[in-house]
Every structure is written in structure tokens, then in C-alpha cells.
Amino acid sequence: VRVLEQAPEFKEIGAGIQLGPNIFRALGKIGLLDAVLADAHRPPAMEMRCALSGDLITRIPLDDKRFYDRFEHPYAVTHRADIHAAILNACLSDPHVTLETQQTVESFEQDASGVTVILQSGERVRGRALIGCDGMWSKIRDTIVGAALDLVG
Image (cartoon, rainbow, N blue to C red):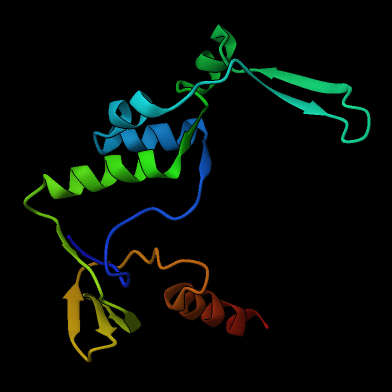
């Protein structure tokens, strides 16, 4: 795995993040469940309140047996820095993962055997798959979703 990061260093951006049961299934599959749960807070419930009066509208228990029986994993909240650190540490300790900073993806080309990423430097990086996690102004998402919208529209 080759991780290309456009920033000069790997660091989190943002603050708190909510983690539903589905993310814990995924984290379990990649061996990061315990690392993320170690720093996460598991609230006993979620409450919805009226914005004007503060009156309770509904309460969803998160720490009871019914929740675990239904979803098999907890609901939790954490700071982005904590989940980012767990993932980053796992990558740093895996010899099959290389982390590269100051690598900006300009575009990509896909064919039947894989994908080629074109970097701002002009370098072409070939691989079997591409996962675009390039933020709000994602060139990868824009290319994929934009192409899909062109077909529909």
C-alpha cells in the first residue's frame, strides 16, 4: 500500500467524531478495534432535546443489552487525533505500507488491470486500486461522481 498525502506531514484536521457500530466492524477487520476503543468514550445514551425549551424529546440507550444484541458493537465518540493516531501507528508498523507526504494527486486513469495516479510532479503511480480520501475538494470524487452525473443528466 502506498499512501500519498499532499500535506507536509500526517496529522489530523478537525475535532470530535461520532463512531457508529458499523465503523467498529470495519476496525475489527483491520485489527484496530481495541486501539480505537482505548481512547473512545462510550456515552450511556443519546438524547434529542427541543432547541427552544430544552425539553427531552427522545432518549436512545446505548449501553444496554438490546443495543449490543442488535448492532454487535458500541456507539462511541472520540477526537479525530485519537483515531488518526491509531491508524497512523498501524501504518507505520506495517512493512507493506509506505507513507509519502507532499504528493498531490492531479488525476487518475483506470483500465481493466488497475489504476494509474498522476501526481502534480508528473510522476505516474500504478496500482490495483485507488482509494480517494482527498478531502472536501476531492479531485478523485469529482472525477467519479461528475462522470456519473454526466451519464444521468
